[in-house]
Length: 264
Image: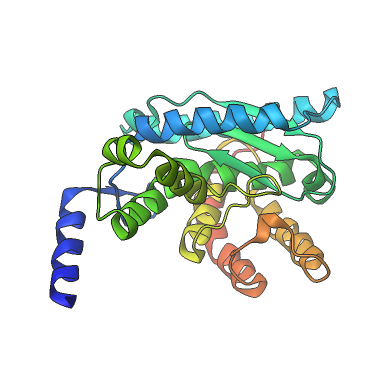
């Protein structure tokens, strides 16, 4: 039985793998970008349809301004690497949800982003917000959601193609997608692996620096988040690396990130 499992795993790995930008890590890929983006658009519309969008014009403008700058940096990076096709189908959208009790933000495949107003007191300014958006956008462009979806298709449906799974088991498949991108009762509770979280930290530093935000601001932001988590674990910190590990990793990555930083 173990032999069959190993053989099946080998066949799945041979069937499709992609490479995470910047880190170069190989990941299982059984789901196309277009399939993930289509599912994401549907889920995003449903979420916004039930959420209360912020009427604070200044804060909403800030979220969109910072988001667009980070997104432009992402596009610049991929263009420089000759990999603009990796962002094909992306339609960036940034919305601020009026929910002061939810300390969270997320980016779905295809560039659909939401920030909850509860995280703004911790971001404090545009630079702090760039830390958050850089991190969340990195989850999307690193295809962490697709990787989780692929893992779940392999584990639960034997590596069935997403299109087949949708036609044969639409309810199960949509549940798998929601789990892959982290749909939860308190907004989107993104529960990525610690490896993916650390990877998003790494990519996020690079992208925010390219956008003209000081990556050194990531350390005090995460220190504020750590202090917050001592009394009440925010959704944003779900399954993230330990505070000490994250700070140490950020410090070790800072020389690399600062090479990309050009203040605006």
